[in-house]
Length: 285
Image (cartoon, rainbow, N blue to C red):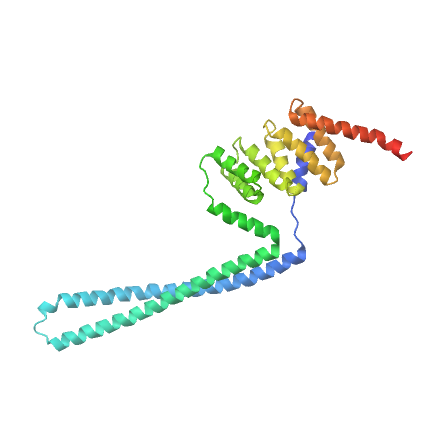
């Protein structure tokens, strides 16, 4: 029961929080931006419809010109002036339609440019509202989009680990997350959860780290990384001032994985805790 409680706890406390006033401001800005986007999209749709309606008329005029040119040699009973007038009128009509098309295409280009610019400004404003962390995440996504990904799952995981080791934890986090989406049930997902937890731990984001360690403890109890996940969980609980849970994680580690290297560290820390507990009453005297 104690082990189950320890596993469930990180999943329960890992929620993220966002200030209510900033949330309302963000929602209001998003609604305004959405309205602008909707108006631009409507104009773009209308212009495209006008273009679609004009194109068949151009095709008809082209067909008329082609037909007239093909029948010149059989139009000997008509005067050259008559034929010239007909062709001139057809060419003028065609020129007018082409002018309309060019106008529509120009307007479409302007609308698409405006929509693209609005999208960029929207993203910048949202990121500014969310803070530096959001900017880092956006930069990581951009890097991830440009990064060539291996198709092999082992190589993919190795790439994420390489980025984490190089200190690019935000990009590594993106890659670990992608790995878990691609291969959620694979045995290597245990390493991905631990690696993802480590990226949070390196930034002192203990709640998020505990969530990933908790997933590892719950779903992959026999994985190589599981003992270290217990050890990291203990450290996270300690940082969160949850001393009892921190000790429980160490005790479960020693009990379940007694031969692991992590268990040796856990025994040492438990011994230190016991010494501190015995010494506490003497200090009060």
